[in-house]
Length: 251
Length: 190
Image 1 (tube, rainbow over the protein chains, first blue to last red):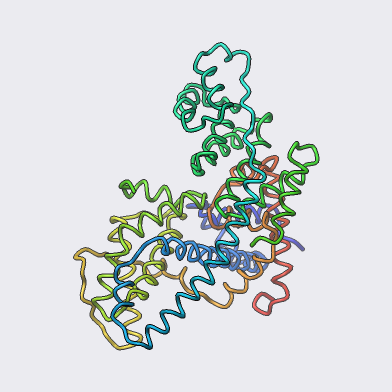
Image 2 (image 1 turned 30 degrees about the vertical axis):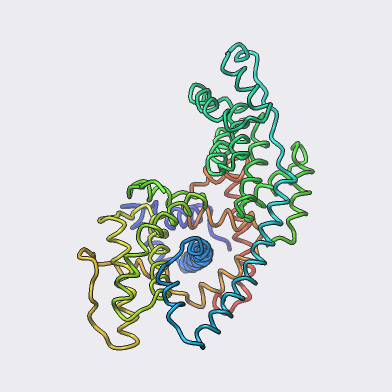
């Protein structure tokens, strides 16, 4: 017999630390008395710990990459003051690094080429009600002539005045991508996704997937593409599936 | 890199976006690794040891930052130093019976041992992590959002482009089913 919906919700709330006071004590009492509930809770705790462990491994990999960006004077000093044995092992280490760098570069250049192939900034469309605004006319001109860097301050200005203008936000995100400001770009697309603007949500998902691709976050990139590829009504259905296919052999 | 205060750093770590987390990690690498190298090198360790304990400390802080009830009662600098001090002292005691450590920073705090449990790589954790890797990217993402980032179902639905909260619940339930069926084959979970 499966657990009741109520119990599943309670376990979820408990694992997210949302049960407090009486609710918490009554849940724990029930866990002590109900073996099936206890077993389910144990499994879910094990899953939570496993996810944390997997996440720790991912974080450590990312930290190792960050570490490589920093030059440690102590590391260099150690290599200088050593004998032949250490020199030989240092050379081996350098060769190993070159080997690793070759594969890393190869992978990066793979995703870089795929990103470049699929990233085409959207057209900036301006609705009738805002067309009269002189700033928007200049902005449209700057954007459509690919003068992205100069368009950025104007984008900020008009979006501050009208945060829900998804058309502008989408183009702003594209301009930021062109200027390689990926963090800011993803924030624009996430905003559109969060407010669920039906006209622009799929475009936002598509460009967010490309940002993730550019940043090397393939898991998040694929999740977004699967969402688009699974929706036959989406304008991005075919392109998302194509890109997913191209990413098949990229780790 | 511009200076970040502890509040801004915690916000970066709490974000579910990896780029934001990495921005925080990068800042801490630049700001605090030297301090940890000092204490480890002064206490029979080398640069590699220092970096290992520093990375462990960053992982502990990162995981704690995801918990609603975590309250940082000191500066991040003191917290990181205290974790590294604790971890390095443990290692020294294990290998050479050294019971004291010569501190290079005056301020440190007592670290609750339960916070360090996240670093234990038990067989069970490794098995679940391995099974997780066999799930689809979408399943890995939804389970990570829920169990690790502690996101609400409505937020997950927004982030993953699912129709609504119920849609997210259904997807999570389907992914859990898949994961449990994989785990069933393991003697650890029978």
